[in-house]
Length: 151
Ligand SMILES: [Mg+2]
Image 1: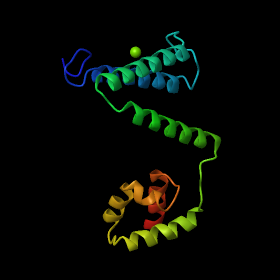
Image 2: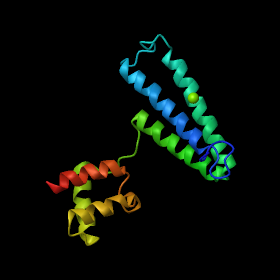
Image 3: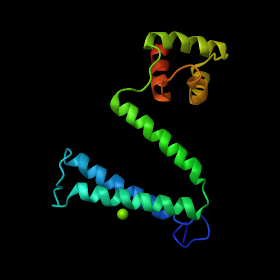
Image 4: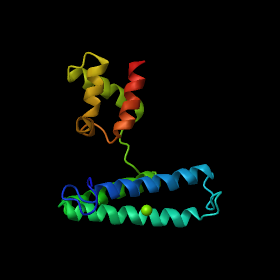
C-alpha cells in the first residue's frame, strides 16, 4: 500500500492523485462536448465537476494535515495565487513596460549576467526571481520575449 490513506509514509498521496485525475477526466469531457453541460452519456458535467473538485479539496486537506505540511504557508500562497488569477481574469495584471522595452532590457540583463549561449540564457530564464526583479511579466511571457530576441 503505497502512500494510500492509512499508509505510514505520505498518507493520502495516492488518493490525491486519483482525485486530480478525476477532475482532469471531467474537464476532458467538457472539452469534448464543447463546454455543453450534458455529456453524451447523459450525465451532468457541472455536477460531476462540482463533486470531483470537492474530492480534490478533501484529499488535499487530508494530505496537508496528515503529512504535517505548513498550512499557514499554503493559505498564504492560495491567497496570492487566487489574487493573480483574479487579476488575469479582470485584465488588470500589472504590466509596467511594453514588449519592446522589455526585449532591450532582457538583452542587457542577459549580457550583464554573462550569458554567452542561448542555453545559458534559458537556464537564467528559469530563475524566475531574477526576472521578477526586472519586470512584472510571467516566466512564460519572458520566454516568449527570449524567443523574439533569439531571432
Ligand atoms: Mg472523485
